Amino acid sequence: MRDGDESQNGTARIRAILEFVQEAERLKDTLRSGFTRQGSPESVAEHSWRLCLLVILFEKELQGLDMLKLLKLCILHDLGEALSGDVPAIHQTADNGARQMRERLDLVTLCKPLPVDLQGEVLALWDEYCEATTPEAIFAKGFDKIETMLQHLIGGNPADFDYAFNLGYGRERTGAHPLLAQIRELVDEATTARAKENGQL
Image (cartoon, rainbow, N blue to C red):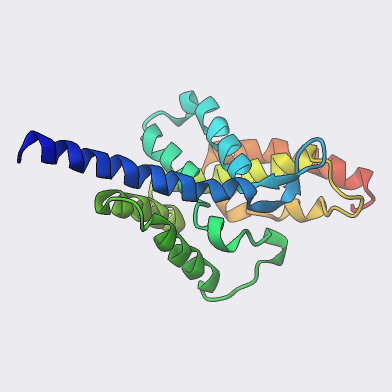
Protein backbone atom coordinates (compact mmCIF):
# COMPACT_ATOMS: atom_id res chain seq x y z
CA MET A 1 0.00 0.00 0.00
CA ARG A 2 1.33 3.42 -0.88
CA ASP A 3 1.80 6.07 1.79
CA GLY A 4 -0.92 8.23 0.21
CA ASP A 5 -3.45 5.38 0.29
CA GLU A 6 -2.60 4.64 3.91
CA SER A 7 -3.13 8.27 4.86
CA GLN A 8 -6.42 8.40 2.97
CA ASN A 9 -7.67 5.26 4.73
CA GLY A 10 -6.63 6.72 8.08
CA THR A 11 -8.53 9.90 7.32
CA ALA A 12 -11.63 7.93 6.29
CA ARG A 13 -11.55 6.01 9.59
CA ILE A 14 -11.20 9.19 11.60
CA ARG A 15 -14.04 10.79 9.64
CA ALA A 16 -16.27 7.75 10.29
CA ILE A 17 -15.58 7.82 14.03
CA LEU A 18 -16.30 11.55 14.23
CA GLU A 19 -19.57 11.07 12.34
CA PHE A 20 -20.65 8.42 14.83
CA VAL A 21 -19.70 10.60 17.80
CA GLN A 22 -21.78 13.44 16.37
CA GLU A 23 -24.77 11.10 16.03
CA ALA A 24 -24.25 9.73 19.55
CA GLU A 25 -24.54 13.33 20.84
CA ARG A 26 -28.30 12.78 20.64
CA LEU A 27 -27.98 11.05 24.02
CA LYS A 28 -27.46 14.48 25.60
CA ASP A 29 -31.04 15.36 24.62
CA THR A 30 -32.53 11.95 25.43
CA LEU A 31 -34.35 12.43 28.74
CA ARG A 32 -34.93 9.97 31.55
CA SER A 33 -37.67 9.99 34.18
CA GLY A 34 -35.32 11.31 36.87
CA PHE A 35 -34.46 14.88 37.75
CA THR A 36 -31.23 16.62 38.69
CA ARG A 37 -30.74 18.21 42.09
CA GLN A 38 -32.06 21.52 40.73
CA GLY A 39 -35.09 19.92 39.11
CA SER A 40 -33.99 19.70 35.48
CA PRO A 41 -34.92 16.52 33.59
CA GLU A 42 -31.92 14.17 33.61
CA SER A 43 -30.46 13.07 30.28
CA VAL A 44 -29.29 9.55 29.48
CA ALA A 45 -25.80 10.96 28.85
CA GLU A 46 -25.72 12.43 32.37
CA HIS A 47 -26.78 9.10 33.84
CA SER A 48 -24.09 7.24 31.88
CA TRP A 49 -21.42 9.72 33.00
CA ARG A 50 -22.24 9.33 36.70
CA LEU A 51 -22.47 5.56 36.35
CA CYS A 52 -18.88 5.59 35.05
CA LEU A 53 -17.81 7.87 37.91
CA LEU A 54 -19.38 5.50 40.43
CA VAL A 55 -17.54 2.50 38.95
CA ILE A 56 -14.19 4.33 38.92
CA LEU A 57 -14.51 5.19 42.61
CA PHE A 58 -15.07 1.52 43.53
CA GLU A 59 -12.06 0.31 41.53
CA LYS A 60 -10.19 -0.95 44.64
CA GLU A 61 -13.20 -3.07 45.59
CA LEU A 62 -13.41 -4.48 42.05
CA GLN A 63 -10.04 -6.25 42.01
CA GLY A 64 -9.80 -8.87 39.28
CA LEU A 65 -12.27 -7.19 36.94
CA ASP A 66 -11.34 -5.77 33.56
CA MET A 67 -11.97 -2.12 34.43
CA LEU A 68 -11.66 -0.89 30.86
CA LYS A 69 -14.30 -3.35 29.73
CA LEU A 70 -16.52 -2.43 32.67
CA LEU A 71 -16.31 1.26 31.79
CA LYS A 72 -17.01 0.51 28.14
CA LEU A 73 -20.14 -1.42 29.15
CA CYS A 74 -21.27 1.49 31.34
CA ILE A 75 -20.75 4.16 28.70
CA LEU A 76 -22.37 2.12 25.92
CA HIS A 77 -25.23 0.40 27.75
CA ASP A 78 -27.93 2.99 26.93
CA LEU A 79 -26.53 4.21 23.61
CA GLY A 80 -29.40 2.68 21.62
CA GLU A 81 -31.80 5.01 23.46
CA ALA A 82 -30.40 7.91 21.43
CA LEU A 83 -32.95 7.15 18.71
CA SER A 84 -36.11 5.82 20.39
CA GLY A 85 -35.67 7.28 23.86
CA ASP A 86 -35.76 5.87 27.36
CA VAL A 87 -38.65 3.89 28.84
CA PRO A 88 -38.92 4.65 32.58
CA ALA A 89 -38.60 1.56 34.76
CA ILE A 90 -41.99 2.22 36.32
CA HIS A 91 -43.57 1.88 32.84
CA GLN A 92 -41.62 -1.18 31.71
CA THR A 93 -43.66 -4.34 31.26
CA ALA A 94 -42.93 -7.92 30.21
CA ASP A 95 -42.71 -7.75 26.42
CA ASN A 96 -40.72 -10.89 25.49
CA GLY A 97 -37.65 -8.77 24.76
CA ALA A 98 -39.36 -6.43 22.27
CA ARG A 99 -37.97 -3.28 23.93
CA GLN A 100 -34.47 -4.72 24.04
CA MET A 101 -34.71 -5.80 20.40
CA ARG A 102 -35.85 -2.33 19.33
CA GLU A 103 -33.02 -0.73 21.26
CA ARG A 104 -30.49 -3.06 19.63
CA LEU A 105 -31.84 -2.24 16.16
CA ASP A 106 -31.53 1.46 17.00
CA LEU A 107 -27.95 0.86 18.10
CA VAL A 108 -27.19 -0.93 14.81
CA THR A 109 -28.56 2.11 12.96
CA LEU A 110 -26.55 4.50 15.12
CA CYS A 111 -23.36 2.50 14.52
CA LYS A 112 -23.63 2.51 10.72
CA PRO A 113 -21.08 5.30 10.21
CA LEU A 114 -18.44 3.39 12.20
CA PRO A 115 -15.74 1.19 10.64
CA VAL A 116 -16.85 -2.45 10.63
CA ASP A 117 -14.47 -3.50 13.42
CA LEU A 118 -15.83 -0.83 15.75
CA GLN A 119 -19.43 -1.66 14.86
CA GLY A 120 -18.75 -5.23 15.92
CA GLU A 121 -17.05 -4.19 19.15
CA VAL A 122 -19.84 -1.83 20.22
CA LEU A 123 -22.58 -4.37 19.47
CA ALA A 124 -20.68 -7.19 21.19
CA LEU A 125 -20.27 -5.07 24.33
CA TRP A 126 -23.95 -4.10 24.29
CA ASP A 127 -24.95 -7.76 23.93
CA GLU A 128 -22.63 -8.69 26.79
CA TYR A 129 -24.26 -6.07 28.99
CA CYS A 130 -27.75 -7.38 28.17
CA GLU A 131 -26.81 -11.01 28.80
CA ALA A 132 -25.22 -10.06 32.16
CA THR A 133 -23.25 -13.29 32.53
CA THR A 134 -19.68 -11.92 32.71
CA PRO A 135 -18.40 -10.37 35.96
CA GLU A 136 -18.07 -6.99 34.27
CA ALA A 137 -21.62 -7.05 32.91
CA ILE A 138 -23.01 -8.16 36.27
CA PHE A 139 -21.43 -5.14 37.95
CA ALA A 140 -22.42 -2.78 35.13
CA LYS A 141 -26.05 -3.85 35.55
CA GLY A 142 -25.94 -3.58 39.33
CA PHE A 143 -24.27 -0.18 39.42
CA ASP A 144 -26.71 1.04 36.76
CA LYS A 145 -29.61 0.37 39.13
CA ILE A 146 -27.77 1.92 42.07
CA GLU A 147 -26.95 5.12 40.16
CA THR A 148 -30.62 5.48 39.21
CA MET A 149 -31.74 5.10 42.83
CA LEU A 150 -29.09 7.56 44.03
CA GLN A 151 -30.34 10.14 41.52
CA HIS A 152 -33.91 9.68 42.70
CA LEU A 153 -32.76 10.42 46.25
CA ILE A 154 -31.31 13.85 45.46
CA GLY A 155 -33.42 14.87 42.48
CA GLY A 156 -35.67 17.90 42.52
CA ASN A 157 -38.61 15.56 42.03
CA PRO A 158 -42.31 16.37 41.62
CA ALA A 159 -44.46 16.18 44.75
CA ASP A 160 -46.00 12.84 43.70
CA PHE A 161 -42.65 11.13 42.99
CA ASP A 162 -42.86 7.43 43.96
CA TYR A 163 -39.87 6.83 46.24
CA ALA A 164 -41.30 3.53 47.49
CA PHE A 165 -41.01 2.07 43.97
CA ASN A 166 -37.23 2.07 44.36
CA LEU A 167 -37.36 -0.32 47.30
CA GLY A 168 -38.28 -3.15 44.95
CA TYR A 169 -36.45 -1.84 41.90
CA GLY A 170 -33.56 -3.84 40.41
CA ARG A 171 -33.23 -6.29 43.30
CA GLU A 172 -32.01 -9.15 41.12
CA ARG A 173 -29.21 -7.00 39.68
CA THR A 174 -28.12 -5.41 42.95
CA GLY A 175 -28.23 -8.78 44.72
CA ALA A 176 -25.83 -10.39 42.26
CA HIS A 177 -22.72 -9.66 44.36
CA PRO A 178 -22.08 -8.91 48.07
CA LEU A 179 -20.57 -5.49 47.29
CA LEU A 180 -23.61 -4.47 45.27
CA ALA A 181 -25.89 -5.75 48.03
CA GLN A 182 -23.94 -3.77 50.66
CA ILE A 183 -24.26 -0.56 48.65
CA ARG A 184 -27.93 -1.31 48.00
CA GLU A 185 -28.59 -1.65 51.72
CA LEU A 186 -27.33 1.88 52.37
CA VAL A 187 -29.29 3.29 49.43
CA ASP A 188 -32.45 1.53 50.66
CA GLU A 189 -32.05 3.10 54.10
CA ALA A 190 -32.04 6.56 52.56
CA THR A 191 -34.88 5.66 50.19
CA THR A 192 -37.02 4.37 53.05
CA ALA A 193 -36.52 7.65 54.90
CA ARG A 194 -37.56 9.69 51.81
CA ALA A 195 -40.59 7.48 51.26
CA LYS A 196 -41.68 7.94 54.88
CA GLU A 197 -41.20 11.72 54.62
CA ASN A 198 -43.57 11.67 51.66
CA GLY A 199 -46.17 9.46 53.37
CA GLN A 200 -45.52 6.47 51.10
CA LEU A 201 -44.64 4.03 53.89
